Image (cartoon, rainbow, N blue to C red; front, side):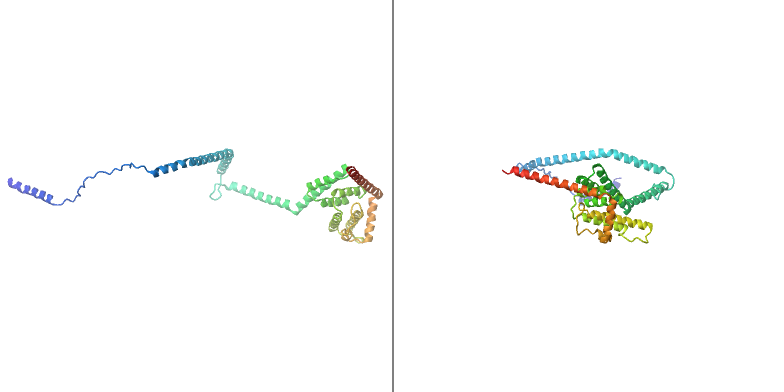
Length: 350
């Protein structure tokens, strides 16, 4: 037994000696060193004191800026809340309408337009309604902007102008300049156009008698136009008549009944216009008056047509007496005004 145990003991001793002689592969533990603790310095820092004072001086301005920003933000929030409160009811109604239309379109059976939820059964009537609306709108715009519509509008304005002057002449027997100014502002026509339009209307529609001539004289005076402007008015009336009905023709053989009446009307209009142009109270003789040249009438034919207009006018003597009486009244009023001025000057002088 002892012999058996000896080798094992030797082996144990050998292994222990080898273990002591071999170097250890594990690292050696380093000596424990104490931890470094940073102690506060007892020396006062001047820089920290300066930074604290600067930050303290900046704090009031920063606080004021923050207060201003907060107040502005609060005001903006209040405004946004007011706008939201105002738009809240409209938004609700709009959302309700959208939801209702969506539910209605979804409830309609049938195929849909492409990938959308709109059914063909609803898309076709909507497209037809849109096309009809666009075409109706385009037709309405063309109707009101067409030459025919503009012509109709001008005719209505002319009728209103002539009707207004007729009412003034029937009520008062004369027309004032202030009333003509009101008509001018109402219709948009200038004074020459007002006089031209009413003269042509009166010569076409009213009997050429002393009352009409007296009314035209009153209208000419109330218009305030210069003597150089009246011939241009008569020339423009003559141009428009010739453009519409043609010039004066004295030899009317070979004309039809319609053409004969038309040329008689042109002769009558020329005689009336020529009579007004020769009337001193209505128009002063001027080289710019070219009524005969416009109508293509000689001097002899012009006198014949003027006599015919006088015969149609009837009692011209009473008209001339009335005009002379008005002239005398105007001259007497002018004399009274000059006498009053002389009296005032004599009383003021010592």
